[in-house]
Amino acid sequence: MAELGHEVLGVDVDDSKIAALSAGTVPFYEPGLPEVLQRNLESGRLSFSTNYARAAEFAHVHFLGVGTPQRHGSYAADMTYVRAVIEELVPMLKGDHVIFGKSTVPVGTAAKLQELADSLAPEGTSVEIAWNPEFLREGYAVKDTITPDRIVLGVRGGESAAEEIAREVYAQPLEQDTPFLVTDLQTAELVKVAANAFLATKISFINAVSEICEITGGDVVALADAIGHDDRIGRKFLGAGLGFGGGCLPKDIRAFMARAGELGADQALTFLREVDAINMRRRDRTVDLAKRAFNGSLLGHRVTVLGCAFKPNSDDVRDSPALSVAGSLSLGGAAVTVYDPQGMDNARKVFPTLNYADSAHAALEDAELVILATEWQEFRELDPEATGKLVASRRIIDGRNVLDVSAWQSAGWIIEALGRSVNNLA
Ligand code: UGA
Image (cartoon, rainbow, N blue to C red; front, top):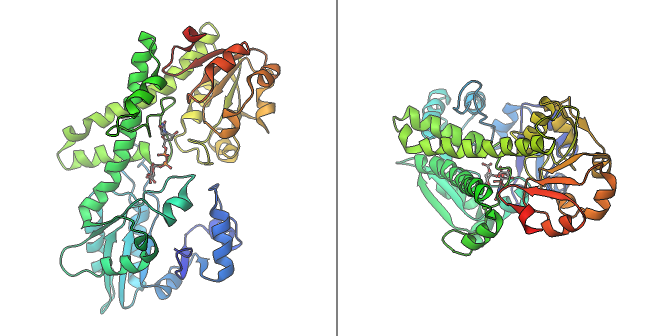
């Protein structure tokens, strides 16, 4: 928002994050974001605080972007943090305010928050809740925010100031003809979860086909290329492999199912359970391939897992397929060494018992099996000959289908790739 020319105050309840941001440090890895932060701190357009009272005084337009993680012991989204923002902020407001919700929420949330805000707003204060879902991808957050592919705004029926304010706030992308879709509140909430459910389904579709390719000797990568040429299908998100993870897709499909159940429409989304199951089976399959490499027992074998972030260009390890595989191998008795260019600190917190190497080179030394689990550029570019000199045994599983199979085979590697019967290609 500061980059788009606005005066912005960022508020969080976490002192350490606010201190880091105020000092110009982004407390997570996101390419391009440190530069944006620096530039806007220096211009004076951006500052940070843990103080809600300051926020209440500072602005009439508020964006609510707190987390909605999966609730413990349930598929539903935990709405505690979203409600807490309204409960803290609204009683302090004076005048006319609009709160744009950005968090991914169960359909019906905005209407409920409006009721809550109405009950908490001081006399003479009006607070409108609008919904403005966020579609940015980690790793491309800056680009997706400055030049979004669409802006969706859900507004309440009757009197509403939200559209006019959103047009001012987003004047810059709107000048560049970014599609701007104004809907009711529930449609905007649903757009977000439907988009993520579709993406998850697309990935699981190709991974289901992978399972058939593995049995029949087909090649899922060639197949994805071939069906991807059809415009109606498209090649994007047909990357077969270890499947989806992260802080969004897995919990969003579960929360969508849970909400459908609450609405008495669980049948509408039961297929998402299958999407989830297919996704999880890819992790099992990878562990299984590793076991088979050692004739059924992982005990004492040295396995190197390249990658622990849920995808490249991110340090996020939430529900990471790579870390899940590394963890399962370790629990199965293997001596697992992990290396990731950015995800190590976060991974150590979740899985302290793995062995974390300082570089890909160090991680590969003496490995009996290598698993490429997150497709960082550094791993895609590994030279099979040079890598072969480091390991104890030239054996690799390409969990992301990014390696040049014949080049690795020519260097004497036994390579397996999910959804491809590559040994037959040699
Ligand atoms: C996802 C959506 O893509 C964003 O549009 C959305 O705004 C965001 O969730 C969110 O709800 O906040 P993100 O979680 O950053 O973004 O990650 P994706 O790029 O969607 O990747 C998700 C997972 O799918 C990763 O683990 C990735 O490795 C996997 N994936 C992706 C595949 O297995 N195959 C593919 O072809 C593509």
